[in-house]
Length: 227
Image 1: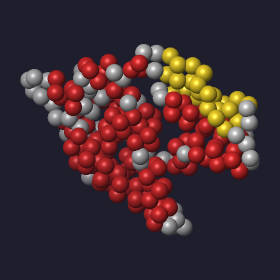
Image 2: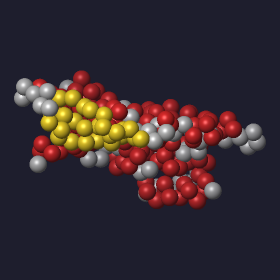
Image 3: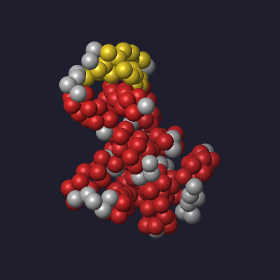
Image 4: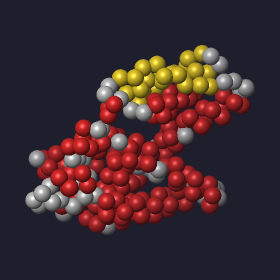
């Protein structure tokens, strides 16, 4: 079952593992490995540790080379915003990484497959697995293509709430977010929020948390403002 499922992920990322055990480990959550009484599987935690270091080096080099005008402090802030947990989770969802994670029954029923903390960790574990399988250059290629690509658009999305807040304040206006809908069971809720500027609704956002919905609403408001 795993081999068939993981082939789809390999096609999405354009990389075929030589050592498929590394891929399986990268996709295995501790809740799943703990349930295996026989042939207990390794989980992704050690690979995540390695992948985090590879990601820091690759992203540091990327920003150093592509933003020569930035100071050390500015580079640090930009790197932090692009490789933080929400940013990695955003990138992981782009390749539907959650669909391939091996989870225990408890984590499955409580929505672990879409939890930012889990899918961002698996994204780093996947980087670590590629690094061990083919070296830094190939891991860096994955990072550039699936995490650091379209940098400015992603930056706008990640920082949308603060950017919109600053924009509205400069114009002397007011901004708030109103929850308009909440659906689904506790472990799999969807929130719908509208961004309201100067008492006028300007955009809507949907997310698995109120914060994510607000971020989407802010992003949509910024995009509308640029048109």
